[in-house]
Image (tube, rainbow, N blue to C red; front, side, top):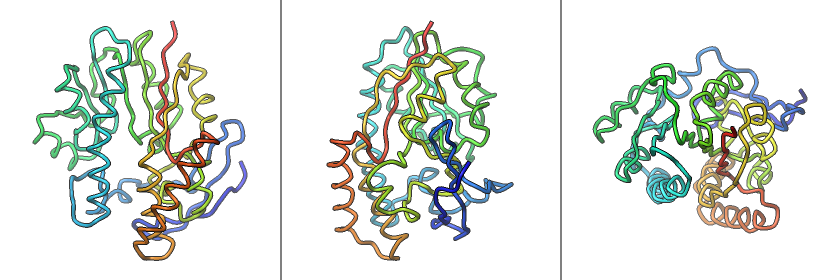
Length: 276
């Protein structure tokens, strides 16, 4: 491994972390990994564990989240399935599964954070604490929406997850892309590095290489266009201490325009199919 970049936990502790390049996987790894990662999520403003709308950034996040719900459900509806069973890993407060349930899906979910699980219960979505608590069955679709980058024992976790995908079933993954324009522009201030909560940082090539041993074939890659704007908004705050809304909008827009040519967007959705 070689040093790629040095950044900080700008969201919470201001501690410094390094990003190490893993050549064989074309991805980055956060170093060092804290012994107790849970403490880095223990913050009242960690938004994926709440539904808060305390400030403009929260409101933008919630707007994007609710807009994206229809897009995500629409995406899985287009996949060829037998029984419409879905497992969402890192389900947060349960909004995606709630929407999927309304569309006739039999839902299962995993969320380690107790506060988020309790919030999901108010929406009549029951989530398990870990993958080990999920029934011994296989699913038509398994989703990880901005979750893969958080998993500590990555290869072991991938192995456990892929075992629960049916033959001809799908694994749908959304992750940030460290090769995007906004990542290169903001460098150490790029909010999607989010160290140390994000332990891994992926490229499109990373996903192909990681899942190839499990006969999971990448069949489609889709951009997440709103991510560049939200990430740029946070990155501007980390960089200058101010909410530079106009600059964030411009960088997000430029990132998407450049993505049209390079196909390197701020975040991507990867759809992988389990081969026989």
